[in-house]
Length: 343
Image 1 (cartoon, helix red, strand yellow):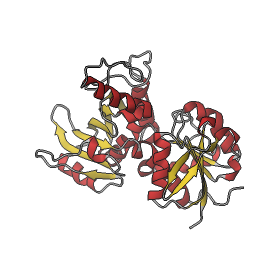
Image 2 (cartoon, one colour):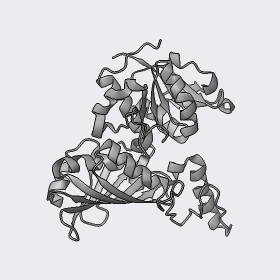
Image 3 (tube, helix red, strand yellow):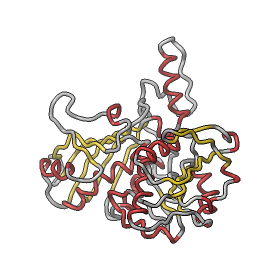
């Protein structure tokens, strides 16, 4: 198999480090690997398999050296550097929200719309969806193909890692402080996160929804089907890793829970753990480090015609970010859309 020179932008962040881990775990054919970060992290070492790689200065890097670049450094960095990388002939897979709704940029979840990567050469950029969207559409895809989804109502339970390392530290420090009677002081979040839930992720929009909730709607339409109606309530919860979602789906056609269970069990990227007994479901703690999106609590909704309800859990640093990015890179290889040997 041909080798590709790979750059990871934001290599010192939680998602960047997870990208390095997954590239090694999945034996991606890396020729030379470039760990890129801000000037303050020059020389800092990050782990790639059995090796330690010293970080280089993103601002000075020549992207002509790389065949593919995985961006995990936020919208500001993507806006500035992704077009430079793309212009140098390097294919960019960006984890930020900056390019997601650009009609010339494919928004990809490989289990759902892999063929859309064929449009990569319009800008040499592919967008990775929002973490909560990625796991949701993997579950919705086979259901939509079978019974045609009319409407989705989803409530999310999103871990602090979705807001970065500082947010995880805030949860840890607040939790520890409460036991010694320290008053929690919110910094990364708008309210105390320890022993609490916060129904607010990202900024508020004019219609009262948050941008995170808007992202789930807009991205699901772009990835899966613009006719699907979706409403979301996105909630930050005091867990470190793993997003969970309570999903209610209304279909055009009848779909029994047993048939849905069998269908989901056979679908790529999904594992069904659905025993109607104590502990017969998957929680965020159990999905950490796993590649799959887990589906539990599948049941028909008797309050609407053709309704189904289920519980969906995934490691947000993996399927919600790093894993999906690496899977996109694998898709490019499998479809002969990228060749090794940087220019």
